Length: 156
Length: 434
Image (cartoon, rainbow over all chains, first blue to last red; front, top):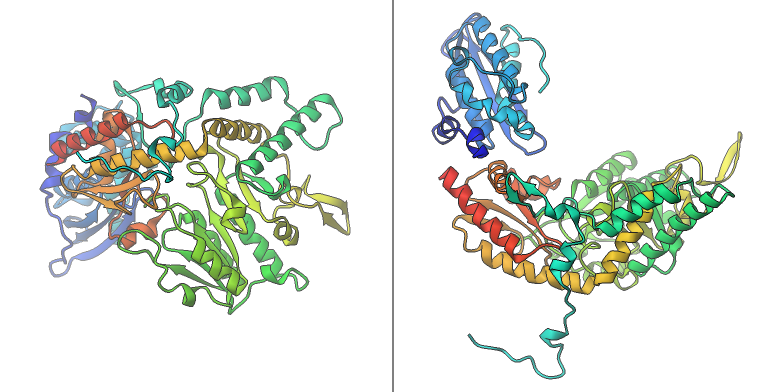
């Protein structure tokens, strides 16, 4: 059934039991910045906050309201990028954006994307790609505001 | 089961006009489609309706046989096209019981129609010699409601910004009805125009306009009714409703996209300055200045959507052939059926009236905590097409404390089996997200 490709068990799991949800303050000394993104067509919203010591993303916290895809995507983002060096994080970011922009033609690398591979099916549903990308775009803005690197421009 | 006899002399149940829904469905080629391996269940007619063969044929026929520009050619094709275009105007005037076809202005859609009125106010406000009913400034007020579509909010916000007038609005009750308790404080001598939705595109509420019209007349303001959701579904009589303007759009009433209507009282349209300048809307043009044509031409600058207007005429013929009273009754029965059926779904909450009185066949709801996007996606996998989101009526979502809703909407071709498919689909949604 097609629907199973979209709502993979992993996505529903992250949706029902989100990891690292809730906005957190930084431990002493870290840089903190956040970005709030909204999907104007459906009203989904997410705030992503990045804490960094200048090279490592010491925490990625988030708060949001929206569909299972956007909220699960935020949970996966937290899992994948928290504690990573900025450069690595942006490689993962780029791989995720490439997967989502691939209209289902891109085969994801589980070593890079972890649970993010579950979103491969979402890429086949153009109306839902923006849902999956919402937290990732907010993350990119938040990271830029926190003064860590910026990944190349992407079109959502 | 008890049967209640309607007393003799009262309208009897069998007196209600009815039609054969299966026969009507056969007129709509798209209803034969399969979606994701299921029979199409289209419950999104408030968004856009489907088009019967009778309309599609007229659209194709116009381009194949009568294509030419209107109102400017002496040749045969030009004359045919002009007759078809003006003939459509007359049909639409008759459909809403307008006293004259010249009161029907063709626009792109309802949004453009509302903007024409708002910009006429704006332009009049810049000219000291303009009709005072259209002149706005600080101290003047425009009244709308909290249940408007964005197209009946934003043009007035922008108008108030330009003129310094104040925007005020009717609140909405918990039941999704217009809160008229503050009517006399809201509509006052300061009010220049009241622009109100006739049927809400999100709550389904059909507003009773009589008390409001009476108050509008008392204070000497103007009344615009946004009939985008009502003209397709119930008999409209602009004389009976005593409105000053109504707007509606073709694509929600079996017509094509790209064509809408602004109806205005002849005397008011004549008092309005033009909005778009260009060909067709002028009387004479000199380098030193221009004078303008009488309405409706004054508001139809440039080549209009000719084939679309002609096809909208065919749509009106089609709807009239079935009968708007019969369509209204069919949808009333569907709405009653759907409200009962949806009440059986655990965790389902309806936004808007929960009785089939003073409401149309558009029902918004939440299913537990499941996000409407997810509801819509699972339903789509079963062939059920509903709208999800804020329905361009974000203030209503805010009023009811939700970011979005799921909305099912019906039309003349909708069946009770389709409502059953929706209810079964919602059961599937609950399984996926429980």
